[in-house]
Image (cartoon, rainbow, N blue to C red; front, side):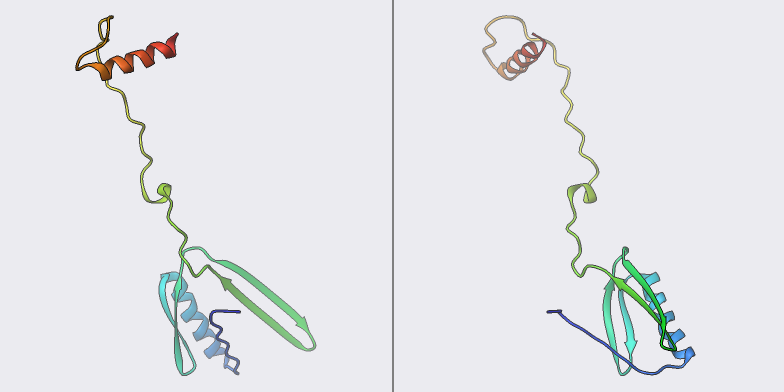
Length: 123
């Protein structure tokens, strides 16, 4: 089932058709919220930057039918961290003097642990 369907069928002059297409083109150019006038009412839609289009031309039975279809998602895609933030830099280790060899106890125990990790990596 569709959330909403609006359909209008009526005869137009070439000028009226051009006016409707111009209004649609202006709304597409502007993007964001657009108001399109259809007969006695106005239809408000949000137009995103990216759309999917389909053009179809059928010729037969003494008629030409031109269909222009534009589609887009109604929900905004969720922003990912990559879309909203600059890439995070990896934290850099400060160059700290090597702890003297020994028990590694005392207030510098964090450094000793770092030194042990570094030593384990190089071994």
